[in-house]
Length: 450
Image (cartoon, rainbow, N blue to C red):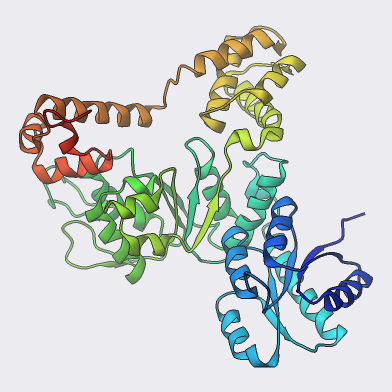
């Protein structure tokens, strides 16, 4: 038997809470009533709701402020406002901002049940339309991930730009691909670009394309990755590493829905949905002048936060067995699983590298194993080896570049002109590299602390 749908009801009128709660309960809903917005937010953080029904006027945070906070945390949750006659114009305006609907007090029971049913049906239809295939690579049973995936599935049905936040290795590209598969664009391309892994000098040409002869070495016309994603989804990973000059072109593309390849005389119309991701604090980058605020608002229509693996430990055994099956197929192995104590050890480990680190540990164990089960000793050895922080290639390149720049600045005492000359780069490009790695030349001048 399926669980009843859960409605969180918020009003400072105890009599209304009781009457509305009784009406909804008699209709088969599970109702949790609260007298303030703050109490309702705490309840929704502890357990997921299917719909929020809130009064407009509340002590402390009002109903519209509650909606704004719910929209930030749970973009997929339908919200219905209860309003008096005097605030109907405000309620109408709230609907244009994303509130599902409103009811004017006093309202009868049938109007209440009808509006609630409509809100739940809208959420349910959007959730069901994608099926389960879209999330096949997202292995999870943790409540925190189920909440996130419910939001992702609802967002996928829209054309809104999405910003994914989370630590390195937490699965941002996997989630981006899942959103694409759950969207109306699923039959069209999904193009992923790591903005931090492509040299700044090549990134513009890779994204926007170029004409033959546009620059030295451009021996043939190249279609950019944005144009290749036409009709589909463009995933920009590590968007915080994008150079400021290129941020301007990306903003123009988002506003005008067209791209101009390097060296081209005219622009090309494109239809792409942009999902971006970062593990960096974009607010700090904006404050420091390293990221455009107008581009941030274009990309951050909806924000989804991926939890670290340590925050979803119940998923670790599932993920470990999933990776084991993949490695078995890749290397033609037939390892049956993990010894119980090995699986328990994995579930309790730190995982600073998140899912990527867990995948590497399982692969290392499988490659070196000749037995039917992976033992505790094998797992402990692999985790200890992974704890030596052997980075992926892109991260190794990034760290080498930063170390190289620091050495140049130390050698030249923070003189950018001299450092750029030694690096065989012009000052503008060298400054861009310093911004990318958040290095301040003045810190390397003689007498300054390093």
